[in-house]
Length: 255
Image (cartoon, rainbow, N blue to C red; front, side):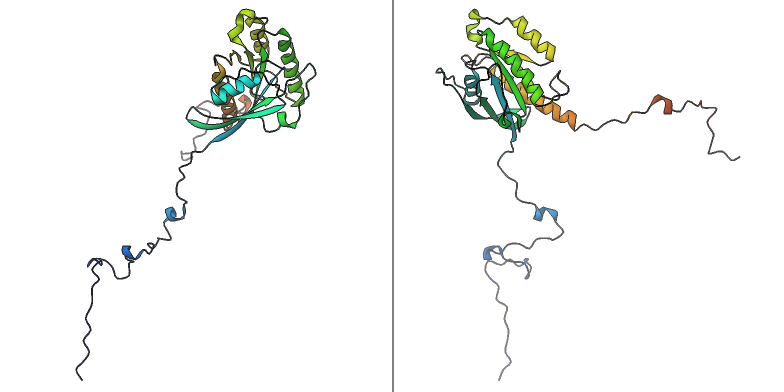
């Protein structure tokens, strides 16, 4: 019986330079990953943008335009009909200084002369818009009491400035400024006494509406940067060396 001859049969799709142990691309097998390659353990990059979530509450008396300002900022439209609000929230996405923000604007119910803040207005809120009407003098007095009550409720130690509690004073209904009952000087004086920004807005014309919320986001972000800024050690003057160059010992010389 003649000896059996073995002949090697090459696949048409196989390349002569391909290694016999390497899987074929046509077979659909996944390539072997290098266990020392750290990239093989990382998840694929997500195409969904990352949003920084913030929560801003709008405080003020009834009928000062809190809902209209929130709707104008979130949806870029004016709501002409007044509807008393118990509590509502509007979602606004924007980009400020290269950062994507997803902002929840909390439209609170109208505060009176004796405001009471529940947990929905104090827990998880990053900043406060203190709003009054330029054509309603009583709303200006109410927002002063609201501001004082807010500081007491949150036990704010440093009451001046926005470092501990971000807040902005806003006089709304600038479009009917010819009926003004609160002067710019009086509102600016109150803002300066508390070292907080002051804006005059119009929900009808959208003047300064988004500028207020953008300013608030920048204040919140600046406070976070200051909070995480590394402290620089200070050397007390009494601990500093006062020896002159001639009095210092020369450790490199041979005695």
